[in-house]
Image 1: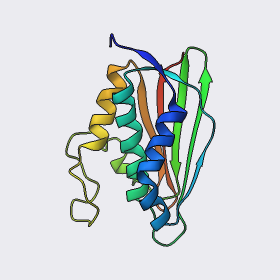
Image 2: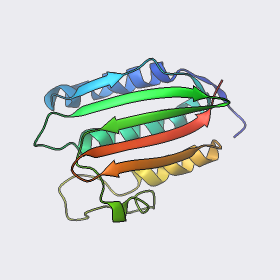
Image 3: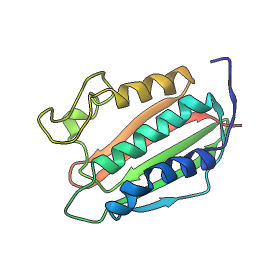
Image 4: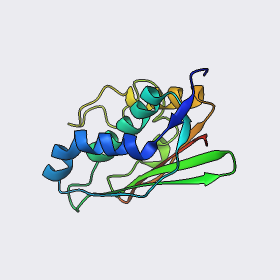
Length: 152
C-alpha cells in the first residue's frame, strides 16, 4: 500500500456516527467512543472498514436488551489495536473462522439484510494495509472485532 497517510480515526468514527445517527437513535443504542490513536493507511479504505464493522454491530443487536457499542484503540509499539465491541447476538463458535469468507452468512435465512461480503472486504482491506483482524465472540453475549494497523 503506497498511499499511506495519517488517518484521524476519531474523525472517521465521528463521521460514521453522524451518518448512522438515525439508526442509533431509533434502536436506542448506547455508543461509547474513546479518544483513539491515529493510524497510517488509505483513508477511504479504512473508513470502509470501520463503517462495515459499526454497521454490523448495529444490524446484529440483541432485541431483548439495549444495545451497547464500545469503540476503543490502543497504541502498542508500532501498531494500533482498535476494538469494536457490542453486546449483540454474538457469533456461534463454529462460525467464527468462516465469517471473513466471501458470501458467508451465519444464517442465510434470517431477515437481516446483507450479501455476506462486508467482512470479507474488511479483511482484504486490513490485510492489504499489512494489518490483522480477528473476532472474539460468545453467542448471546456479543462480539469484539479487533483491527491491528500501523501506528503513526
